[in-house]
Image (tube, rainbow, N blue to C red; front, side):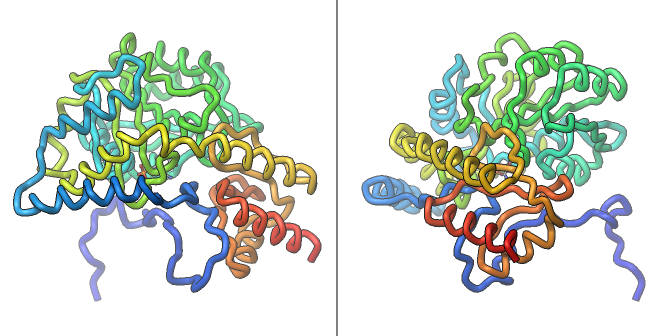
Length: 358
Ligand code: PMP
């Protein structure tokens, strides 16, 4: 049979690797997606339910395309002087990054990232026809201002991706490195802050006022525990956001999603109150891993990257057979594990120790 006429540049591209739900009947520790282990409960769940019910009562009408109320709530939540007209919401930060690259990337344009980093940045570049350029982080997974400046100068990319804290390493981004990139970038600088709520440094959204080509991406998938609802947003100047209205499909965010996101934002303080316990668990897991002889990258996020000292894909596969899901995302020998519920974390630590003593 002749090959299907799929785009030539997509023939060797693989889909993003999401959780293999079907391959494991009964996972006991879901530590592969950096999700929150806490589903909404009690009064919070009730508030979300009533928001969803109200939204369903207008299901016959198309959503509000302006999404003004949601944008205002996201701006309030972000703080740092961000106004509603600086917010672009969508179905997860992946989708809003896609909007950005549809408008600013494309054939003949380039995007630069510093690996190992979030693989969807490259994927989104590739599927929009934007040429991806990968520069390396240092051996400690940090990104120095010199390394960043050299790569920017050498490649003069249209779009630069930074990620703070970086996935999968968890490492923070120095202010000096960010500053040099903002000063020398010829085009847009995208700062992915998906995990910023866990970070000791906090959001750099305050820089938007002085840097008209800075775009920050945020998500409700991580700290808010809303991965299944799909809400992410870009923060940028209204001028940068204006062309996104051309490339986004009409009514891209459903009435239901917008209503539930708004209800969650109204309860932000309570929904985010668990963060200190995540950080305490992160420390406990780090101590246990280091105690067992593993190197662990410094993490400012809700996950840890650790050196298995072995073939990481074999370790990940063995853990998966025991129902423990972690992520084999990059540097040879290293695995990424999310900070989950304490019980899941205990199971992970115990199962990893069993592998090591095999
Ligand atoms: N950015 C980073 C760095 C991530 O790790 C993720 C999810 N793993 C995302 C963006 C996408 O998140 P979402 O589309 O769920 O908002």
